[in-house]
Image (cartoon, rainbow, N blue to C red):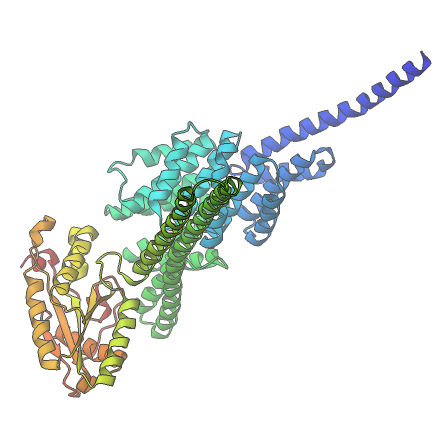
Length: 615
């Protein structure tokens, strides 16, 4: 009896110790949930709650400590702009976590940070590891946050159809107000870039109010930027300026650099367009400060472009030149960033495809091994069964070899072909042209190069839309293909500029061919596009007898002749004969734009460009 009493006493003592511990961890969990709810709503309250949780970390379970580390990583990335430290913590959590919900949250945060840092390759790799786990995540809110991270990353990659797809996936799953706010923001941004926003603004205003209803001013202001950009596209810059200025102080108070940079760079451009140079300069300089150490951004290029134009208008050539150089560097960095994100998308797609193929191949090999074991176990079966197994093996190997070859061919076409027109891109044209010139030089064979640039192409885009501009580029490429032989090289150099390398043809014959091409371009029937206008181009022709077998010289001389044709009135062919231009014309410096005419420094188009296109 005495022994039994002692056991009961020990059990009571243990329970008396466990009960306070369980109660403490339960209270800690409640405070964790409270901090999680305000993490994107109230920066100060979020920080206060995290400090209180740190002070009581002794009451937490191991899982709760990991959840606290996640919230600290979120705070470090979003509010302290320290992505390096945030990435370090999130990576360790992703590797250590055994709880599916926490591992999914850590992976989603990694995707977000890499997307904002423009490190798209790593972002896609983590997305490919994280997103398949969403079906094992018990908490629907956590699952929606991860899906919204996919929408964010694909929008940042310029893959807006995929971004819209994942935003819609969240919205169709009865999300909580915060997830609905974020998914709505990403979906509206994707629709803006896809040109799929409705004419009225109700969907944008509804998302802004939904975000404000939960106190998420960050997402609300990102949605306001989308609304402002829509108004600018609709020719309502004053409404856009009023909206941005009204909420700029609120964005500054949030302290998220990317949001502030977006708002201020857009304001700088709009103020410059209205001639308010002081305000435009203030917003441009503030944009540069906000960008800081963030990766290359189009907002930085826009800010320097505004400062360059202001200095030029104020007749400050030294400052204008300095700002233009910075603008050119930022613009080049942005273009490099765009190419890098496209390459990252294709690289990770290829990696994923290779892994899938490898898994399928291993699965196939395992199946073959099982079949081989059965064959070994049934060695006394007839020879026809063995032949059937061998035939199956050969067929499988041939099938996989065929699939791999198809993928390689597809990737090669992607790298060599201009996606819009289907002809060679600049890189592939350059490689093929240099090979052809080297062979022709060895054979003593003459070559000629035709270079042409569509006249007033920007006016077509501005007057009828970029879809019509794309239609024109396709028609031009199709027309030129009809004139080229198999040994000729046709390529799109960029924008509305094309080139043709002709083997075994002298300058005179190439000039006649260029004239034929010029005439055919003017005969393109634009009524198929739903509009009436005439397509013309200015041509420059050079040949190896005068320019040599150096592609750069051929292009340079052809470009000089093209430029000469532009000055002479456009829609004509000029050939390089080696004559020196003793009195070159003085060029007016004009910022590089989408139109090939602008980049050559020509004077603006007539007052009514639409009528000029139709004439």
